[in-house]
Length: 167
Image 1 (tube, rainbow, N blue to C red):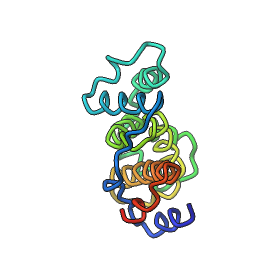
Image 2: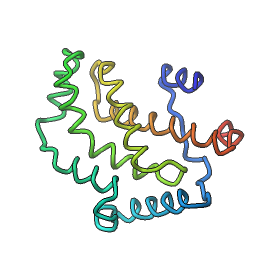
Image 3: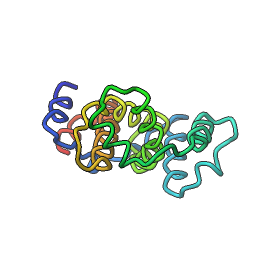
Image 4: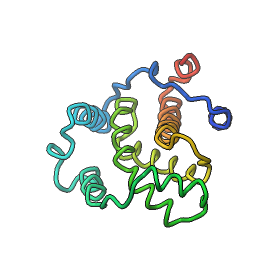
């Protein structure tokens, strides 16, 4: 974990692309494979049960109204980093992007809802560090780093530490 945080501080992106996809066994593995298939096909909303927590979350974020221009809000954030209402507005505008990136990170042994949560938390924790520039790149980098972190932790728990070090 310390090594991961040092990589982040040096703005070095952790590339998880070479990590093996996790096959797994049991009920959790079935859920992971199903989420990966549905995410890749774009059919999560249609094919999940109505009471599925992931579907309920996706319906909830779909109901959040677009409340501003992200570029304008990012410029405002640069000058007012400690405004919690502004940070919440920006985070709400970015939730769909968190979902898109989480779908791209499926198959590594982490549930999609957990990836979304980690990506959202990573962005939230780093909004106060934004100091200008391309906000979209800043946003995506922080989301992906947070997802890579949880995937790396999961990989370590699954005993693929050697493959992680190689990647």
